[in-house]
Length: 226
Image (tube, rainbow, N blue to C red; front, side, top):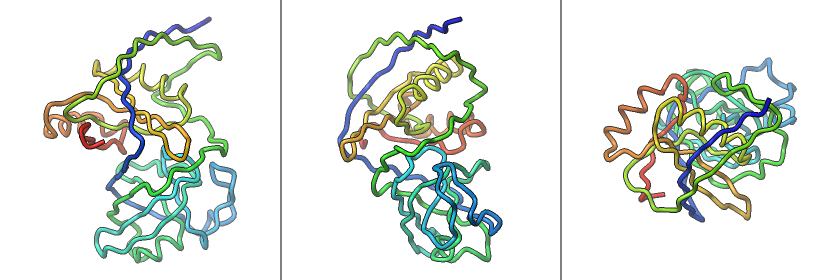
């Protein structure tokens, strides 16, 4: 059986961007030492690495402890953390630099410093129990424009097929406009999936609360500042 989807996207392009998230950070337990990460690399607590749900492997991010303003730069090589409200899982040495080892969790800000290549294999992860066949067909109606207002960024992807699957699911579930931002970093294209076009930040925040359980890492973006 073939699945045929009809999707309508709005694209706009930019050549530089700053992606920032705030939320809780945790760190790897000692039992994970030497275990393979999602990128295939073995976890070592002495290395400055991190797990993130959507950023490409190899992405360099700066993590700042909002309590003491200490920062550390780490490289994404794993997926997670899959706990509501947590946005990044740090290696033990990175957590030590941020001085929250004895606390266990920290309120942090995550900033993308340099995009990764994403070339390391990234195991597929089910999204809302979507099941698809090997052959998929998508029909596009594309309008290029400069949107205004606010949206909710769900995630950033390098594989276009992953973005299309999620976009179709979001559109049918929430009946909101789907906007894709094309980002080109170091010659590599990335696609940010943004849901909705709200006239105010307050309206965007209200809708973010509605979908927080399914998409805990969603954050608000202002189109004119992207």
